[in-house]
Image (cartoon, rainbow, N blue to C red; front, top):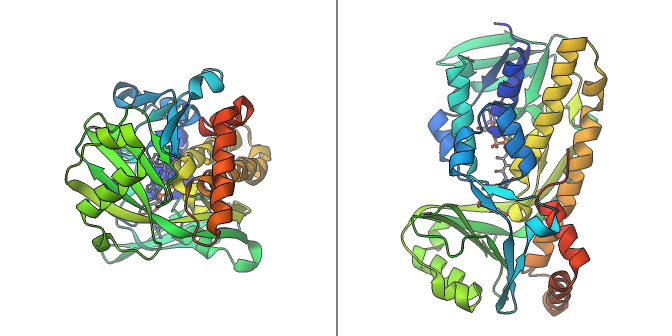
Length: 390
Ligand code: RFL
Ligand code: PHB
C-alpha cells in the first residue's frame, strides 16, 4: 500500500488534517486503533474558537456546526458569592466562541471522509512507525490478525497523548515539559436545560466548578475532585450537591438536576514536547501537547497545528518547497506556549490548590477582584479566550 501522508489517529486532529489534504488533492490514509463508535463515545471539548470554525468551513464540514452550534458572546466568572460577566464580544472587538461538542465535530469529519471515499483503517493494532527519519517512511500494523504495511512521504502523528508517534522518537531527540496538577475534573452530561445560556466558571472554597452545555436540553457540568477519586465515589446526588453548593445564589436556584447520562474523571496536566518534527514525522494536537481544560484550548490548539501542517504540506506538494515544513515546529510551538500559559493561568486562579493554603486563596481573591475591575485585565482574558490569531 502507498499514500502521500500516513495519518496516525482518527481524532479531530487526524480527521481534519486528512480532510484539508484531500481537498487539496493530497491522498492520505488514516490509521486508528479504536472503533468509530469508541472514538465518538469520548465526551470532551465543547468550545470552538472562530479560527477553528473557519478551518472546519474550509474543510467543507461547517454546515451542521452553523445550524446547531451555539454562539456565545460572553461567559461568567463566579466567586465570592456573585457572578461577573466577561463580555467577550465587546472586549475582543467583535469576536465570539461557538459551543459545539467535539463529538459532533468528529462525527461531521468522519461522515465527510466516508462521503469522499477516503480510506480510514479502524481497529489497526500494533501500529509501528519505521524509517520516519528518512524520505520514505513506512507504517506497519495488524488488522484482523494480518500484518500490513504502508509506504508514504510523510507521517502525521495525530494519535493523542498516549499514542505511538511521540513514543517512537528516542528520548535524546525530544524534550518534554510537564506539570501535573494535584486534582481532576469530574464531568457529567445530563439531559437537563443548562443553568444559564452562557458558561459559568466558578471559584469556590470547596473547589472549582464549570457549567457548560451541548444544546438547550443537554448540560455539561464539571466539579474539581481529588486526582485519585473514582467515578464510583461520585453518585449523581453527591455531584449535584457539590455543584449546587459551589454556584452563587441565583444560579444555584436555577439549577435543574436529573440523571447523568455520562460521568468521567479527567486528570489535569500541562505538557509540551519539543520539537514537533522529527525527520518526516510531524506531531499535531494532543500527541505533542496537553493543556488543562480550564481555558478550553486543547481542541483549538489541535486545529491551529493542523492549519500550519496542512498548509506546509500543500505548499510542499504544490511548489516543491520545504520552507513551510521546516518552519512548522517553531510556528506551532509559539502558539502552543501562549495557550499553555493561558490555560495554566486560568487553572491557577480558579482551582483550590491543597498546598497553597490561606495565602494562595487570598492571592486568588485579589487576582479575581482585580480582573473583573480592570478593563485591561478583562481585555487580556477575552483576547486569549476567543483565541490568538494564526
Ligand atoms: P485525540 O482526540 O486524543 O485523538 C487521538 C486519536 O488517536 C488514536 N490513537 C491511535 N491510533 C492508532 N494507533 C495508536 N497507537 C493510537 N494511539 C491513539 C486514539 O484512539 C484517538 O482516536 O487527540 P487530537 O485529535 O489531537 O484531539 C485533541 C482533543 O481531543 C483535546 O485536545 C480536547 O478534547 C481537549 N479538551 C478541550 N479542548 C478545547 O479546545 N475546548 C474544550 O472545551 C475542551 N474541553 C478537553 C475538554 C479535554 C477533556 N478531557 C477529557 C481530557 C474537556 C475535557 C474533560
Ligand atoms: C465543555 O463544555 O466540555 C467545556 C467548556 C469549557 C471548558 C472546558 C470544557 O473550559
